[in-house]
Length: 401
Image (cartoon, rainbow, N blue to C red; front, side):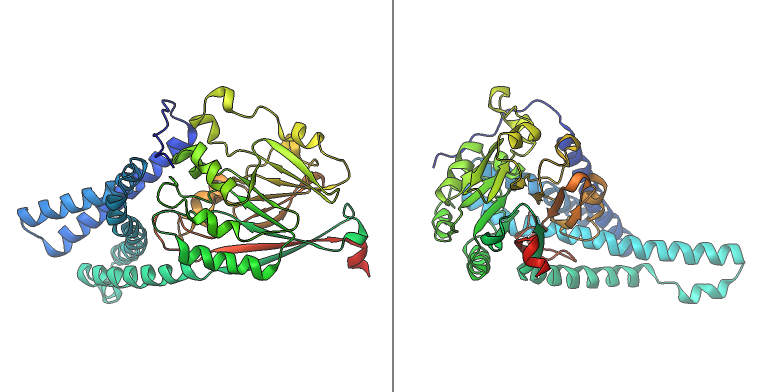
């Protein structure tokens, strides 16, 4: 496959603003490490300069990894990927634990001052002790998070409906989301995911975006692995934001080579049993020319499908279109990773009303948001294990029996 060219996008979108805020916070975490080391160890000028240069380089590593990937510098990408992305996890854990200990020390000092009680200092922690406690927990949490990211879980959901013919029996759907195939996630994790899906023997397989982490160059052979897994009612996919980062044409071709029908602002009816509609990720507006952006609303797309048929909407981001409520029965999404690394979970919690799991919506609609099967950035998860979702759609009368 041709190596994609970086999209030309002058517009500073809301998503770019969020990215810049996140990056500023990440940079502040590196500054926090620098100040902590300086305060505890008082290194000389040369050591301080070297530390500063190292932290500056690590701050920009995620960006360098992305640029190397876009320009198909595969060796450089592999060299940078693990240390660069793992450092992100290290910073998150170090800053989180360190700030908690700093707050504890501040409370103790403030309490001692206000109460005029010097004995309270006995329960205080010295700066050096605090630093080494932080380092210990940072290492422990990073190691644990690495293994949690390998601990693929199966989440099961059963939905009863009057829109499924009783003689149809149950329909089993396997949802893959946010696998992020790329420089870090490859055959080993992919094969684990495929084994789970194969064991479920689903009638339908759906991918709700970010099947790829970026460019498909050098990993396009993985499409052959995915193509081996089939379902009697077919395989359907939608784009996620990462499909646009590495070049949409190649990403769509990869999904098609994997056996997926890619739905881009369109819907299909399958054997008069179920409707599937799919949307492009909203990143399409930032990366594609206006003429390539699907124009139909969700309501319009679904109105063209058979009525009184159970309808699933595939939408990478759990963004609820109020005008579409009542037109679909179940929306399947991903994108959030449930924050991937606690306490980052606060970010998707603020951005989306539902950041993981199942929720009922008004007018008979519902949504399920997957935590995702892979990782974006650091191959680490904490309190947000990866998942494959197995959904059973069952006729209501079958439940009553």
